[in-house]
Length: 281
Image (cartoon, rainbow, N blue to C red):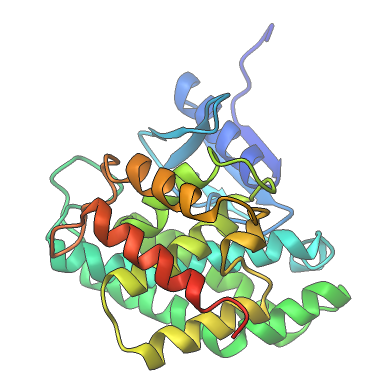
């Protein structure tokens, strides 16, 4: 650039928002985000996901969060419905990962490495979960019809503001840890939130939560077209090989072991197999 702007303005989807945050960080300038699709909670957060050519990724942490996030729901409701489904998957993980981080005693995702998670962050993560479970299916139907409804408005708030604040003040665990390695398996290209939604189902099984809770989330995921089995992400052959590869790759990720118990490769494989067993039910 011949001249560095005073403010960086990002208008677009999650990748646009992440790139603009990087530019603002590099040049130490304010950032304003205007997401046109609500596919992730990227707009308000103080980090960006950077993907390598081989499908792997890393977190680019910034010095500050964007100054403003402006959401025009009349624009967002006309985005491709698949992007809204992805946003639902990313938001779903916020609560479950916040509980894991709290039990593990890990610092927050944002700020210095010793910043503790906050109680209000936990409450926001829970509110995000409650809203999407109550309104998410209706909001997704609104997105498919490109019809602005109150359910869409409430869910848009959860996907962008609450999920963003929730994860910033708590952190990430298994759901995001697994998502990073789903992209390395050949199949249908996944949006970030689609992989995170899949990873959340695995996390619930790994944590041995009540089956009634798992089934509620599982059916909800199916209702909003999030992947719930390997066939949904384009893998129908050599599923067992994909399960083993995903587990062996993910077990070494720093996010995976943010649980109040030891996460093992065997445990991930068993959770993936169990999730696969629900396919077709």
